[in-house]
Amino acid sequence: MELAEIVMNPVRQRIFQYLLLHETGTVKEIRKALPDVPGASLYRHMKLLTESGILTVVGENRIRGTVESIYSLNKSALEIDDDGTAVQTALLGLSASFARYFSGGGADPRRDMLLMTTCTLTLTDEEFTGFLTEINQTALKYMDIGVKEGSRQRQITLISSPTDGPGSR
Image 1: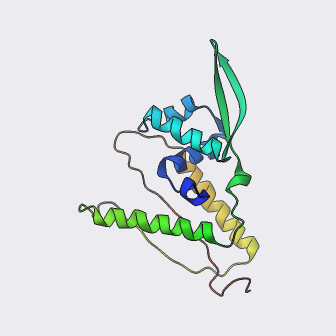
Image 2: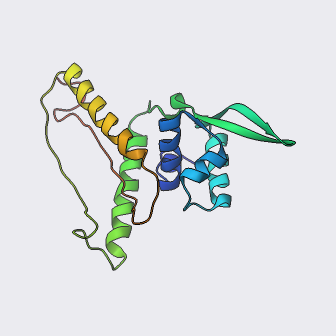
């Protein structure tokens, strides 16, 4: 399975979010944070992520004769260093997600607060890094809010691309 296929799964993305926020976690802790994900499904996702090298076991808790693994994200496994295939696959995954939404028969973009916005920024690399840091801090603040009555999952995707072509300044 391709890296982009693995990371584009919504449940696995929520596992990543948990580990980004908390740095480490056990299946029990992650399950508590994702109560809407069935236990067997969560274990399958954790197994796939571990086998693909995206998660690593960084410790163990011994509890009454059993061993509970402590997981962490292997951030180097998530680095994209290819010819753009991973990014293109991720974009296709997003496109498929929108296609499923609109073909389901009950699409109501206003009710569902569907949003798409595009802007062009003219910043130095340092200013752009600051911009990304601010967005990251805001996202982390809201990613830490747990599942509760009335909450809905919404996927936010931020894509940055040069407007002048590769390597241009």
